[in-house]
Length: 475
Image (cartoon, rainbow, N blue to C red):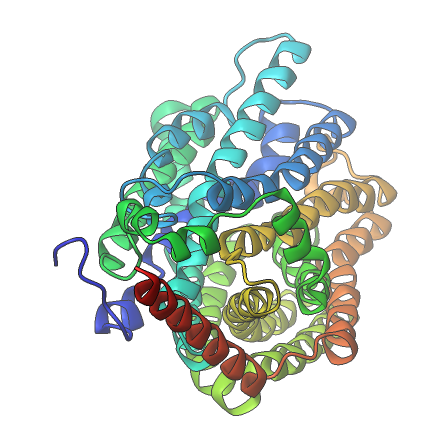
């Protein structure tokens, strides 16, 4: 299809395959989620306090810079292939280099090592915010109704959760192969580099798939009305955030989703090592949750139409929290914990899908209220709960391990009961509490309905048409 000819409606490819890039992106970030703390303590041989410092500082910087990507996308001149699509391919190719050095100890000196690791982590994660933000923003560009946004977000979430299935083969098993071939010192860096290269390919697929839906840079600039509406200044971005109560509520509630994801992903390796005393079960667990999460994400397009995105998230949060508390009650039974975590992952698939659609809805609310299209900025703000959760994980997990007297020098079979309970709380109790808080926030503070969003979108389209006709009449 030639650039310039606009498409409307969702193609079969987008309905079924939008999210391939997210799967590749998630595989890349899984190295960080599953192995970063473990790498710092057990491979790079940094102290637990130093590892916690590295994770906390880098996550804090991530939180501070997360909103910058969306602001830059919305406030700068659109590039050749559009305001959002262009970012899917412009800088992705340099990200693998930084991901390599996030898992490579460059010196025997701890200070030099820490500085280099932190620099790679901060720069690499800042750069990957741009394609992530642009990719999420395209949902609001391509899908024009709440139901279409749920379908598109469901496809994205389905593939994102399929990353868990792919990770069962490309995570621990692939890492073992790389360790055998190159030694543990290089294995993590090579794994991160290869999966980051896969991310580059995945976002290129999204770039091709969405061709024709978004105005090119030349088309946007050629239309004075579109250019004025799309270009945002600092004041517009501030208004899009602080004059948007549904967005603020959603960001708080969304924190629960990410804290669940990161805490479970990071703590589970400790659970199978020190509580279950069976590291091989982690591969089985990873495979099971991959299927459950994928099923939940796919089912969300149907559940979301019945309950709405908001209703689906509330119900899912409550069920997830109950599953985690049940697992905590019998945390020494590894198979029961696997069953409860798998059930929670089923509903996590629903939550991941619907939360993305709700962010797109808050972008519609913002444009309806302010007259400015700050979609990239708002979708970029969705990274903030992610990074805050990552920061909290970097604080909470080491704290829970420290309270339990964790030491990498302690043999797994010699772990104390206090240490095992600390790991169980990090894996199950803390995420459960956050999920209940998230559900309460959605119930009492998020009030956008499907009908309201549909009406707002209709009014926005009518305004745009009126502007075009008025300028045509004046010409």
